Image (cartoon, rainbow, N blue to C red; front, side, top):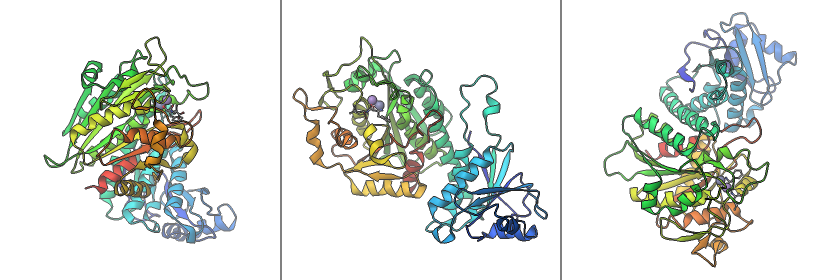
Length: 492
Ligand code: BES
Ligand code: MN
Ligand code: ZN
């Protein structure tokens, strides 16, 4: 569950809340809310700054207790850095740091005044929504697979009030996006012995059952066989967990309006197949369905916002395993498009399921297709954990997605999809191969997909570096739900 949001009423000093969160810049420059608390408390904040307990640097914090003249028993003072350097990123960082602190307290609610700050280049609605989402992100806890005491692992924080006069609409948007992000993180974090293709399909179906205007269809092996999805089926062949193709539709627009289409890679576990991954590279491959989780999360957000558009979400889901029945390096498969592919590496499986899903998606005559996939390690090397790799031959669509990323700070960076790279996919035995070699690995993967989207307005998001935080304690990030949800909002 995500946090429930409301607008704060009253003044910082008078608001009745277990914890009040306010900001202050470096060099003793107070925000309006901090000034108000300082005045009400007879200079308590100024005294702490003068004593050297708080310097206002980005990420710095001080908790002040039971201030005279202030109703809240706790006041969390959050550093915003030098005022002249204040930026959307700084604002987001401050909210994230404060959210981490507040969600670790044993309190059920808090009130955030950071959302009333003037953020350079952004409006008041943005500040409210961004603060809400940052706190929600920080309050997320994974509890799904602990024994009975799971409740003790959860954060007690359930509700958040935010300052921001008249910003009801921003809060509604934040709630919808938070639910989408939660949905994506929940699916992403689930272990791969539970999150198999059929389970993923069940999550989508359950959502569809609970929401009017949502239609779901789940295709099984036989139906995909009949459609000629031999590439997708080849990848799934080595697994005891049968593949699924999940198709969700939201009819929020007019009948006959061409839909927007989202396609997400749903490899519930990527062992590499017969080209098996070495120790150290396989442990995090339960996250290889985060593209699926991301597009499903964006779908959830769009439905929760009741966006007035038509949307279709297509998720090819398989498990990539080594087995006596596995597909092999040097197999040639015929894709649903009719094009043949030489499989030179069974670990380049994402593109082999996406290609058939992209072909299938065209039956909806979408006005744009965006796919999201944890597609290449090369993208992680190129852009690290901060930027999603964006590839498109359509400058206008690319610009829309880049803008949506900037607006939500769920940012993408564009890589070229020039035809020059296409010849790296040449094959002697089939129309082309599924790998292009080490150089430009993220781009040649994009080039491969581009061969299945001819004539379509299409963009590809490689989220291999951004969909989860790496490491033993790393969790799904919920990206690119904010980017995609914002892109859809902007289309309305
Ligand atoms: N799921 C992986 C990509 C990946 C790797 C995502 C590491 C996040 C972290 C994908 O299926 C894969 O294995 N790609 C190969 C492609 C190669 C064989 C051309 C890769 O990137 O090494
Ligand atoms: Mn792989
Ligand atoms: Zn993969």
